[in-house]
Amino acid sequence: MFICAGQSETFDFAKPMGIGMVEMSINLTKLCVSNPPPFIFFVGTAGSYGKHNIFDIVESKTASNIENGFFNAKAYTPLDNVVSTAEDVSRETIINSSNYITTDETLAKHYLANNIQLENMEFFAVLKVAKAFNIPVAGAFIVTNYCNAKAHQTFLDNHKEAMLRLTKYINSPVQNKEKREA
Image 1 (cartoon, rainbow, N blue to C red):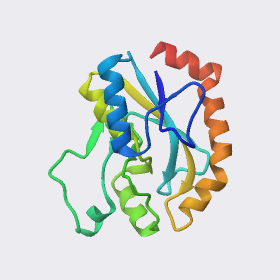
Image 2: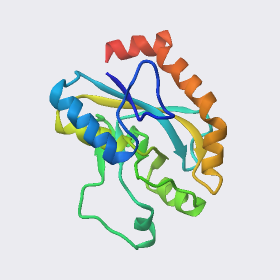
Image 3: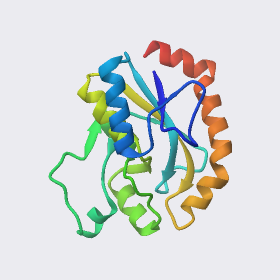
């Protein structure tokens, strides 16, 4: 089953589940309780901490939930803040999820130093829910912006094109063949 956030990020092939980790968690849990899918594939946009370029498409099975305050010793968590369903996590692109968008380039460098390359508001919640229900899960992300002071405007400028490219990527015969074999 393909899922997405919703509102401005909808696809004709994906079921909208909600924006941010809370809405995503609630709605995806409801779905998994009432009608558990055999596989969950999340599609959406992402901001790049600097390694990936605008319109790059990246697939992942690993997410973190690290807030910016962690890097300046202003916050900590007793919770496990990384979740993965990948067989080889060392080769994974880690997607960070927060309900806030990073706009400080110096903080973006801290994420890269910890092998976290992209941010998407929902993916950590998707992985946590899927793991709780023992459902295989993955995601595909298209980069719309860099995590800097211009993040929001760049996202808006690139969003329409990004949605078209991600749809084409998901619907490509090569992608469909690989998904059927997974």
